Image 1 (tube, helix red, strand yellow):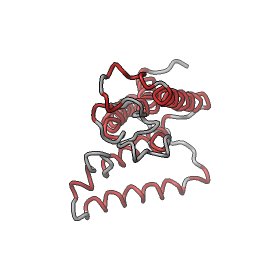
Image 2 (cartoon, rainbow, N blue to C red):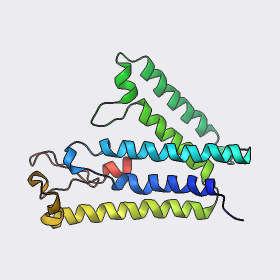
Image 3 (cartoon, rainbow, N blue to C red):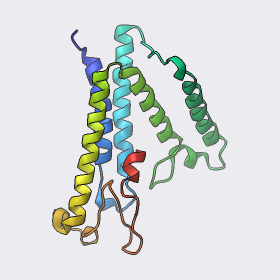
Length: 195
């Protein structure tokens, strides 16, 4: 069966979110790693959502995945996101709760994007071949992040072209980040695994 253009666009945008988000970093900002990743992730999720909406309009149906005995998980996930929204609305600082702080941008809006990403994945992945594509995208992205971090650690001049002295000799991508020489970030791979 021929793949429709909106199905292809939906899967491609979700694959790009899985593959590109860990690879995006900007050492010039000298902030935590999430700041530049969040807009990239949100944009790709919105692009995927547009393709999903076009799919619903063209096909005039939504095929719900058969969850079987795991159906109760959707109730807990829905309760979790309802709690996030409610806590953002009832917070003493609702703007900060909704948008998140500048360095992390981990407010309710970002968590809602995580939920939308999860739902789009559930409705998109319907075959073992798709599961393999997403796993390969995550594994290749993780391998590239590791190679990047190792090259930065073992080859201090690897990112010389940035011509920023304060970045030389330390890892500044997702694999790890050191604010000060006296305060290294021990769990190098934590940020990637949490994204």
